[in-house]
Image (cartoon, rainbow, N blue to C red; front, side):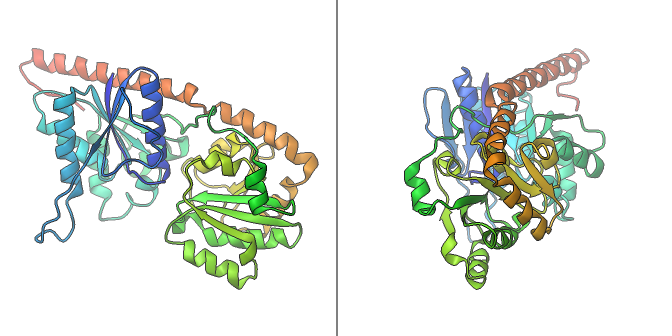
Length: 389
């Protein structure tokens, strides 16, 4: 197949999954065209089967805000026509589903299906805002296929946005060959020179991630056992978290390493991940940690309980339960328990391998294309050109 994929190029989960999927599809023999504002952060390399098309939105004094959604739709049309795409797969509803819809309508009477993958905050946060609710609903209803990364997200979408939508659950996944525990003594000594336990948090440091809770949980853990905290990522809450660590007197034990490329090298030296988010539709960071043998202390929200097996691969607590999460982390760090937890986490991650999940997308692509072809034929026989949705 010849597939166009659009995503945000940042370190957020939607961009990571879209990029990993692009690489996996290319490895499986498909041609993939990534259409985005810049090169996605996780895109390792371009090649004979994976291509990048940059969206350039014109800055003009009349425009208070650059009309990226229109520029994206125009680029989609260009790539569809020039590369003869079979399908557009857009990640994150706003504005990508709308841009995909516009592109599909602009190439009429030719038809190329648009599949929208929902990742979480496009439904649970952004889409609920009154400014975006109607357009989010429209984008979902006009998509030829819709997927969600968890059953939680599917049910939330059906309940609040589009009760009649046919949504397929295809979970997030991880490259288990690349993302596995490869312990680096050098990295371990850099952060824990005295053999301290290493806790880790990985996110884009948005308010919904509750990074202050990460610092507060670690503060309580450190009062009971020698430990350090590795903060991987960046975002608007980073400075607040750094200030809090300093105020609590633990600034020397909290390392803010920013964005890193080979994230598996850092996760591989860690002992427990902290994920105290206000909401998580899946918990991709937790899956990546588990693939590297790191158990997770997380909040019991959204799709997290679908991934983390209570007591087997981690422990779950209510949002804001700093004391409970700290005690959970201490209990997981016990050496006699940690060894088995590492094995459990790795085994659980294998169920979400790219080898298992990528074929689900391939099958859904073919199903959506064939359904559209049948619809076009049916309406063509009645003298009407178009696709029923």
